[in-house]
Length: 245
Image (cartoon, helix red, strand yellow):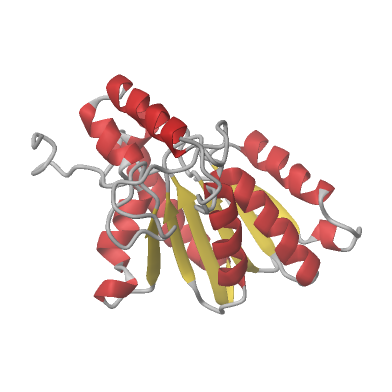
């Protein structure tokens, strides 16, 4: 039933708030995981526009799976900016490609580093992306630079999976602050939802949790079991767990 009491922020609002806050924390590492088509990139664009408005000298690199997509989103951000000066501070890039030359970036945002399931499930592509992260991105960072990765997880060994297992989360002594936004909330949900509450969807009214739940139920019936767990619960099954119901 519709209700005005629903105050769950949208994914775009949450991403924008978290990314803007992370940009003011030197050396911060932020990893946000959410299902596909939930407004992640919309939130990233608004955060970048706000960051550049507040800090015009910030040097930002924005990377996504395709150069054309990166340029498009860069142009969308530029259209929100008030002055020409800030419009020179944002550099688009494609995942797995060389990043812009000097000066190094104060902030790197990686927004969905892979295009689709096939790429995520390719061991070769996963190794290429990890090599890009370890050899190119890390060498592109200014001292105390902030990095944010916003993506849909698609495989337990994708970029998010390797950052969690190899560099570790803040809960296990590592640098990465991991925020998961599954289709149905777990305990300690970053959005403040009670367990089992559905995630808002940008194509649906903001006061209709029943419609959100119906959307995710339909997605679950269409998705493969491993894709549901990976993309929609944001907990990709490992080889030991993928056969577990």
